[in-house]
Length: 103
Length: 103
DNA sequence: TATATATATCAAGATATCTTGATATATATA
DNA sequence: TATATATATCAAGATATCTTGATATATATA
Image (cartoon, rainbow over all chains, first blue to last red; front, side, top):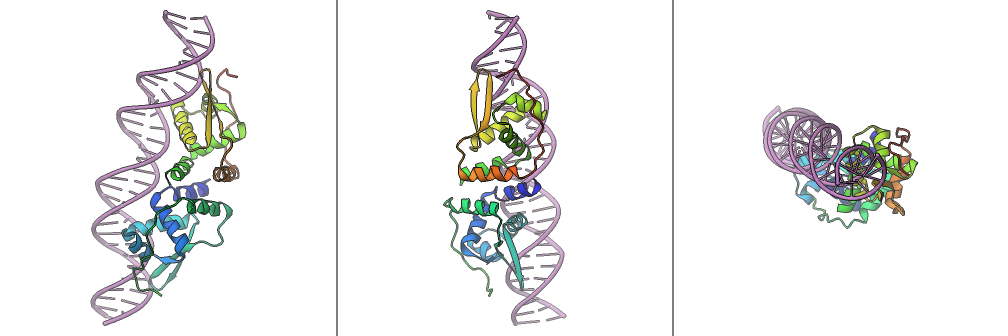
């Protein structure tokens, strides 16, 4: 129940839906890529990424001073069905705008 | 997007999950059945039923002075997958306690 | 070693959601 | 017709969530 509600509340926010979809179509990105693409302040992005990660949608890979976020793989069937549904929503996300000189 | 968020926010609440699951296993029930089974005040139940109905999970059938709520049928694939996931959660709901002389 | 960069976290104010109690409306019954 | 019952809706206070700006931490570079 708590895990289910954590999963649901994580996608109950327009900003997080956009971030999740953005990562879904762009693959692995770092925080400042999202920061620059969406033109949102970093603390806001970081907070939403943490929520999506804790809800089981994202994983992080820290390399150097960067944190690279991507869709967790494998994703269980329920989260997959959610992601599929989100993909059908015609969400407007910005182009990827790499904001830092990473690898 | 708005419809998706309305669907998601409707299940982002423990009380509504319980009510939805309760209707799922008991079939058609009226508001006072839920009121008596859950021992919650009527305005609270009414509000949550409206949210679940507006989100596409429930339908109402008004007969006499009663409003009978049940799972909307047919239910689209996404809401079905949500309902299926909720069914696996081992949610504790009270026994059906009919609180009014209907039917 | 000093500085710059990337990220995470916290506090405070703003906004949204939930619960309760009061009230309005519609229908059934005396 | 008057009263009781079932339900919906509203206002107000309580609680949760979101955004911003400040700050802490870790790593890379000069």
